[in-house]
Image (cartoon, rainbow, N blue to C red; front, side, top):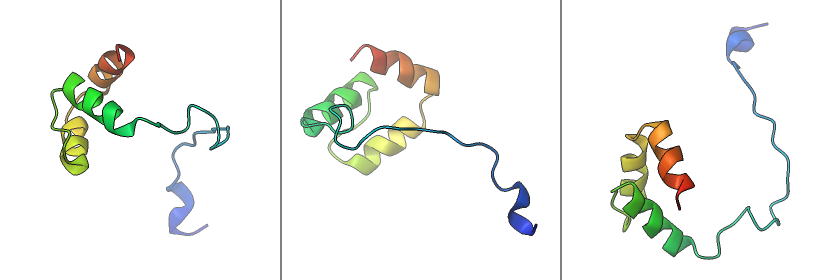
Length: 68
């Protein structure tokens, strides 16, 4: 089987279309600011925002995002 035999530990099945209203954000700049503010992260630079969010607990992100 080779070295990759145990490489896959899980799979997420997703379906949908890239054309649905939930697949894109027409107000991405506004949404980015809202997310940054909600998590007290910088939002002028997407790399800084992502690095900040990566240091947050998943449960914290879910709770705060559900209030947006």
